[in-house]
Length: 410
Ligand SMILES: *Cc1c(COP(=O)(O)O)cnc(C)c1O
Ligand SMILES: [Zn+2]
Image (cartoon, rainbow, N blue to C red; front, side):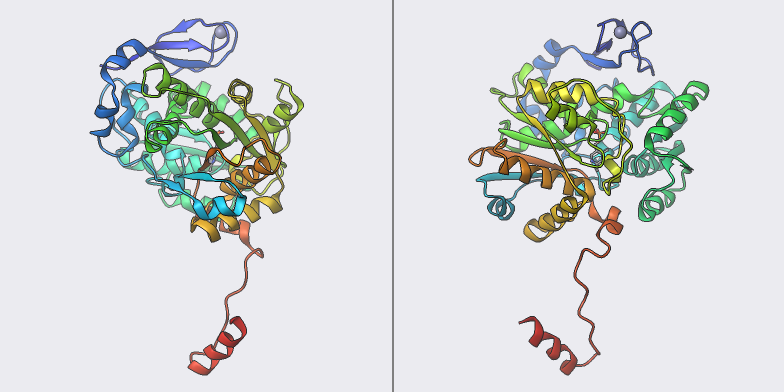
């Protein structure tokens, strides 16, 4: 009943059966899911999608599962919000926020990828799921995995924000805090994945996991009235989300749900970890790995697995890359909150601050339609704002004390 015809190496094109594998035996290229678009085109229409429940599984023909969805039945279909206050502030005409700060159940876009990965892990018959995480993936694997009844091993850098660690621990996974950065955690997890028969969502299940990111792109198109925006700005860690948003737009075009596609895709990173935007700016395809040093920890991948493909997507779409300092990131978080009432985590500050720069430098035209992907909730990284907000007005519990303060405010 599924529409997947197999896996295929993105480099040499060799084909593989649908298995929990992720790398080509011949050239070590990454494997990708291949669909039968002809059959999908016949069965998936705008009408059939619109009749379905408002979750990410409404696009299930374009997701790599065989049977019924089993995880994340309330994930996805987050709001696309017209952001007129913010648009005015940035001096552009039409701006939308794809708001995954309210993703179910753990308030980041990772709930999409994990819903797909764990459904696939069930189909493969795994009883244990695992991941290497910069924070949000840990939350989502812990939560979705609890509900779905998996044993869970979650690996994170020990230096993550304390609130991010608590927000994993509450689901009682086996949380392993590694004395190293994400790239070291990831290397260790590759070794563990070779030895233990677990479904590592972003290692051996990665080809399936990554497909979940497409749903953010599908939703943008549907929510814009089956139109693609002129510009979309996407935060990059491994570069997977950006690559898959571009793929989702192309797939909708392929199966006829989208008439025209002229979207430019923009990569947003923190300057303290900007291997992708740096390569784009230098006009090279070669990612130079870096040691991350940024407040945007959820994006702190110094050696991005999909960096090369993210660059190709940006080039193919005539987009660009931009990066911003920690100070600009904090300003971005505050600007989004005070204009649109949305509290995003540091990754959202990156996206917004990069968007502002792209407008100022003319890469994004002021009369075009722009969508910015806000991928995680600010309650997860409150520490980032320590010392960057005003203090409360402290008063005694009486009217006189309040009115003393009121005089100063007015
Ligand atoms: C993981 C993550 C991203 C981007 O991840 P990719 O690895 O590039 O797909 C963006 N924003 C947030 C909040 C994330 O947690
Ligand atoms: Zn290959």
